[in-house]
Image (cartoon, rainbow, N blue to C red; front, side, top):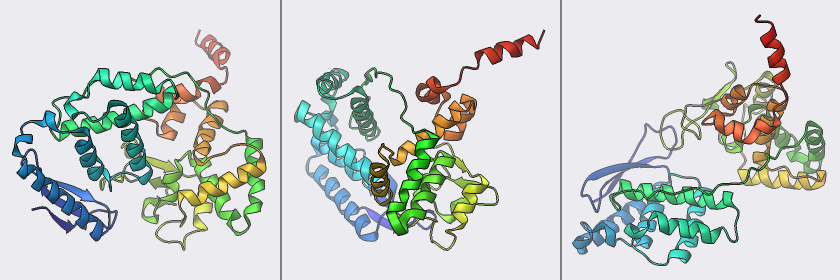
Length: 346
């Protein structure tokens, strides 16, 4: 029933277009799979098996409330397998395990706002609000998928837990220089680790955006890195806004050193870089994780008096509210300067 075909238009290869008949609605649908031919074929077989199962249980097609959570979960994970990062996939698995331990085996239609609120309250006894809210956002994405697949009539309202305000973690310029000097313990890897860290810091990028960047995205003459959405052919970033990373001359010079590397400047993985960062941090005597570089960049800009709106745009936050939430406390006191400027208007 289902079929796969090589999709050559995608910039991310290999890519296959899966055409299948939805087991519940009976409509033909398509999705792009960024994986090998064998993996795509395995997905096709699973969808065919699911369709055959529904043919043997036609009473469930029009009684979506009888779909167990375990069945809906498997359908969701199968659909997302090659569309999200591996770490995100594993996170979904952990969230489902935790949620199922709390609610047991229930039907998807029975998941209500009160059920989720009780789950969140129970988790709050042993966990912090930020971690629980992350789980709730994953559950919301799952329930939205269930709604899009006609498994539930509407998505129940999910209330986030109020989080205590925590100061953003960053290091000082002196600490960064100390960390930079400590990278000498890495031997032959020293230069690449230094260069990657410097690029991330100067662009306020997410580490994955630098490590996954291909030369076709990088324009050294214009001083930008175009960010591509993993799920489509459109230029985008995490916020799906068509983002760019802006490069100063020093960043361009660093990237130029790796022109011979293909398909992108850095042939290393996140784990490769994170392990070396952790080793150097132990030597330096303070914490510095890959994402801390991005937070440090934002903190330095705000402390140096750069307008919070410009910082927000540079860091590609979804809203200036996000930037204010994390960095407003670091803003220098500019109120007297503003008052003095008002005096010049009269």
